[in-house]
Length: 104
Image (cartoon, rainbow, N blue to C red; front, side, top):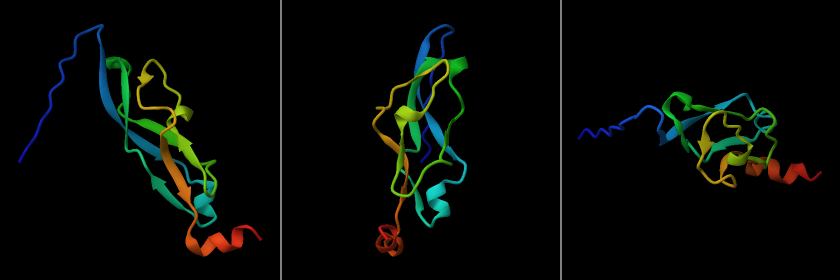
């Protein structure tokens, strides 16, 4: 079964589409043994077709163990992010093996 959606683009009119999220960098938490968990694969955005990127880069380099990066941390240039700012994009989970050693 093949499915195709078509979107008519009218010059000067804003469109709403979903754009893939691309995680970049190696997080500090992963370097310490944590596991990266990508919770959102796409963001819903609105803007002129020529301003909407092919994907949104999210830098996870500073992400520590047990922390997450939310939609609100993403900067949008010439387009609007419609996905709720409080939604987590990715988090670094603490493996069970590390949980007992972190407090010491």
